[in-house]
Image 1 (tube, rainbow, N blue to C red):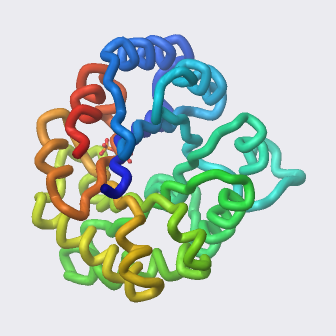
Image 2: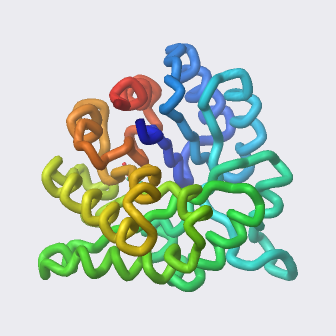
Length: 253
Ligand code: PEP
């Protein structure tokens, strides 16, 4: 079975102590990940090492950064490079979250550079794509996300695209409490898989996990994850509540 992932995105929330407590609470639930399942915690930069040691003994639990810079190194005060993440043994990084695209003006081209740097540094990118409400309402969401993948991912050779995790996150569903229906999620995930198959081939497309993100909660995760092309979720708000995230982890196929 394709890898199924419950990924928590803490964003700019929680103090160090609150984060530590939340991880303790989640780990206390002792959820065993099956071979094809993973749990990933995308935590703020200063918490990466703490989170990594918290999950060190757990099978298939990982830590992710929420971003990295699109340049290799240099005079960019306050920025964090993929190489720095690698030096902390961090193996996942969210790339192109819609909040970064919106508030930090990240473009598809810039994201392609981040993807390359992650791969060079043995970091699996969790590449976010997704349309705003106006695009959904105009019915052009497929073309929009296809362009995001084309400009940020499709320069990669087949061997490398297999290392990517894609997260479809319709912007109108992020933090709004408005979740895509299972039909909308399945339709888009199937479409994303078909364009990856078109660019590479069907076998490769079948290996790429495609997560859904956008108001995934303890009470809707199972239904969303049942969709054949939905391989888990990237979870914001509900990942900050221990019991809720545990329930989401339990909902993985
Ligand atoms: C996210 O931040 O990626 C996200 C999907 O947030 P939320 O679950 O709060 O909608």
